[in-house]
Amino acid sequence: MRGPVKQKALILDQDGIRRSLTRIAHEIIEYNKGVNNLVLIGIRNRGVPLAKQLAQRIMQIEGKEVPVGILDITLYRDDLSTLSPHPLVRKTEVHFPIEGKAIILVDDVMYTGRTIRAALDALMDLGRPKSIQLAVLVDRGHRELPIRADYVGKNVPTSKKEGVAVLLQEIDGEEKVVIIELEEK
Amino acid sequence: MAVIKKDLLGLEGVGQDELTEILDLAVSMKEVMGRQIKKVPALRGKTVVNMFYEPSTRTRVSFELAAKYLSADTVNIAASTSSAVKGESMRDTATTLEALGADLVVLRHPMAGAPHLLAKVGNFGVLNAGDGFHGHPTQGLLDMFTIREKKGYLKGLEVAIVGDLLHSRVARSNIWGLITMGASVRVCAPPTMLPIGLERTGVKVFNNMDVAVEGADIVMMLRMQLERQQQGLFPSIREYNRLFGLNKERLALAAKDAMVMHPGPMNRGVEISPDVADGVQSVINDQVTNGVAVRMAVLYLLAGGGSSEVDN
Image 1 (cartoon, rainbow over the protein chains, first blue to last red):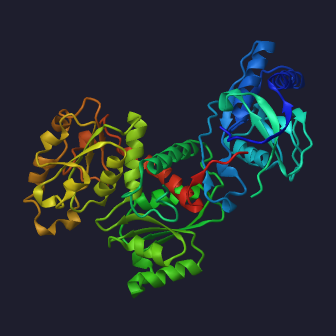
Image 2 (cartoon, rainbow over the protein chains, first blue to last red):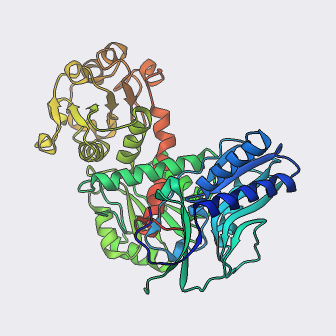
Image 3 (cartoon, rainbow over the protein chains, first blue to last red):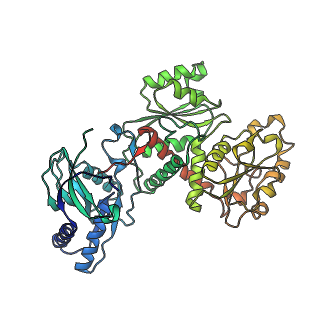
């Protein structure tokens, strides 16, 4: 759960999130010409419920089940040596082979691109997928690496002084995306 | 909380939350060990020095593998080949290790308290891999991890620890940890091998093994340290085996699904009979595997000094 945050602007409400995910689900199916070889992998924490929701949408549209995995990228972070104390490591749960699969990597917010870089490394250690595509609910810009998303719920220009908070039912008990004021450190 | 920051010197005084955090972290680490590519870059660029002043196979290899799975660089120093044989003091050794850029030092030493001294004089993290008769914290952790993995919990379990408690650092670490986690610990040994005042830790003391293992959920056998048995603490190995050895008949007295544990190396036919050691109730090999996962967790924590929740 996130602590109390000072909300600056509402980006997406519950319906907005639902519509974005439905559109992304359609785009994924269209681009991949079906879902036969597809797997969804959510990045902890908030990529996981999003991946599950996408799998549900795809089920509704295509009538086929797409496996969903969970990726914890903590051990792959490039800033571990500067972070003290170290962040909590939770389990990666990918209970299916990713060899030769088309992976849809799912995360909530795309920012510097470093999380995705770590996720790509983590995935490569699990096997050799045929391809990896990236779906994010919000792209807030400020990339520091040459990485882009294939499916974006909403592009939101932000300042680095702001934060983007994604709240999801499964984790936070409510569903919305807001811009928040970052506290001065 | 957070007794364990820079060093892991012992399990005494480490609280339930912190022990749980390490055990949870070890679950994640065990997942990494189950992968085809057993390596994550978490400790890339860190140097782990394994310094062993006493013989060891499993602990040393276990620490080395744990460090390697986390991508740390490892150096092994055996006492017989180190400057210690030339009479270098612990303080000077620490200064040398510091100058060589060690981030973490894993120390096994015949003197209780040696890791504490090293931690005081060095600016690297120190992991106690067994010091004299004091403690062997990672062994205690891996035993707790193994029990929790199989039983699902620790609280309320009846754990019988049998054998040479006087010389056993393994037993001491287990007692501290298990009591903190709410398990109930029974110990059993010949009176000559029971340290005075052990009951003050909260354990129940037995001299008759049949009574000690009755209904126990876990029977943890300790190694008879034959190299320390020149003082005649018991009449003969045969008698010891008859009174304090674990065999099928004795195991039948324990709970039906009781687990058999042993920190190794085993003296088959002394403290444990081969059919029990290799039997279905034995988790001795799991202990070895889990040792690596637990040590990965501890190395990770010490390299970062605790843990916190971070988003994105």
